[in-house]
Length: 577
Ligand SMILES: *[C@@H]1O[C@H](CO)[C@@H](O)[C@H](O)[C@H]1NC(C)=O
Ligand SMILES: *[C@@H]1O[C@H](CO)[C@@H](O)[C@H](O)[C@H]1NC(C)=O
Ligand SMILES: [Zn+2]
Image (cartoon, rainbow, N blue to C red; front, side, top):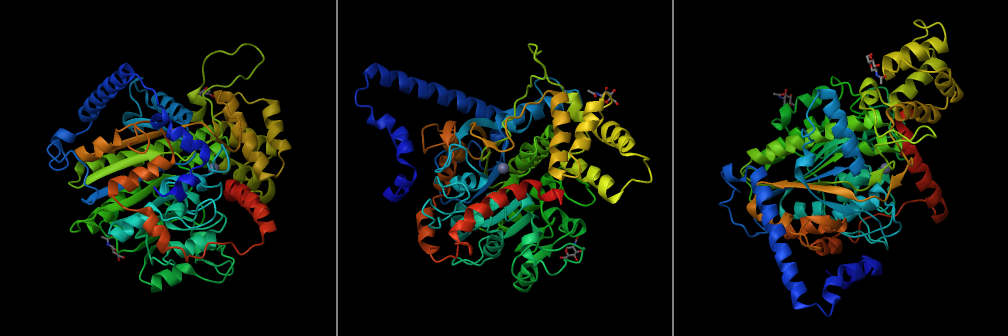
């Protein structure tokens, strides 16, 4: 690591990392005990790892494959992000699923079965990170400030793992459920001083970079930043670019194949009918929450992942390089911001299904493949408990309330608004009270024991969609006894999961010392460094090549803070329009 980068890790953290080597006096007994400990843990991990995986059965990459890492050998790297998912989201979703499906207590989530460690998430500018700094920690392997997209704290663009692997000959892909121009996918495929520069991010994602095009496959939402405000996309909605460019038309002219609807997505034939590069923009902004998603209109994250895995593995079949794929369960974060437990458990389970697709792929492929899955941060300060009365609380929470709730607060806020303002369903209900009790409480939320105060709370929110959203979600949270401490992010450590069919990659993954493997507790930047290590690329080389990329916003310094704040808020409420 260059001294420049070491400095950027922050003085505070480098002392932490160096504490092992700086300990001058270590007794022999200590050293023997430590070695024994490492040996024991190592044996145990190897046992658990080989027992659980299908290593022994796999034809290639199995126990007979080399056990030492060859960074240049063909491999696939799948990096999965659960945006805003803390450990309590997992507990909530796991118990919800067990309740819903009548499962035993040892019937756990797919990710649970591949837990390997945890990640500390702070950014260079705050103990509480945002997704931009969080994703840049993974993509560039360095700490930067909240809002930064693939740039150092001094705003120098930093080479990303996706760019480096593309230059090595890997195929690359991004699969998300939010806008493709949002922070996580952006930090791998673009460089911008601030995450609100989504128009610029879209341009870079299509290849406006000194490196040329670095992304081969895009599937996600965020069509909005690819076409101008002045014209529709043929479906009656308007784009949100500030300029007059239609990047979708430009991309098509440039050789991209474009997919904008569910039926066009289906023509990809599960990934067997993909022409590269592929631009799949399946929603104007976010793909709807899984709890609200109409499968006839939108594919699931698992379906998106399957298309990407199939297409990328076919494209690299005869290559001596594999692929790099980012898959994000993007909207776990939004459900956290909304304090919406009913939507969140379904988002986590939809992610778990996508994780399962990846596991199936790894077990079937002959190519050495590794998946690493983690979160950038936790959102909502979620607790799987809530004290709802002054008396000492009972130890419980009620998953049944989340099961009875059949829509997100986001969906229902729009629905209440539409009744109040546009008289939608006005023919079915004679009054607001009747609409709220029959339709919203009984039908949508599955709440039969609503009170006069509950109804009054919704009435008090008027036609303010955000107030409606929070009021509706609070009704569900209080009843299920789910606790939230913020509408923003929190600083809690998040989990790291991993799996591989390769003996050598497994040995790397389960190393525990800093900047070595990912077993145990790690700084988030180590995850980026780990991907750099196993693929043998040098991100500093990429940093030199992208110096000239345009990354500053075209707004004044004074406007930046206002625009940033406004943008953060808009992202949370954008589907309430
Ligand atoms: C493959 O995609 C093309 C469009 O790119 C489409 O015309 C064709 O019907 C698709 N094939 C299948 C099997 O879906
Ligand atoms: C959930 O819905 C069922 C069926 O309508 C009802 O019997 C039950 O009381 C509801 N549970 C809660 C906690 O509201
Ligand atoms: Zn967030």
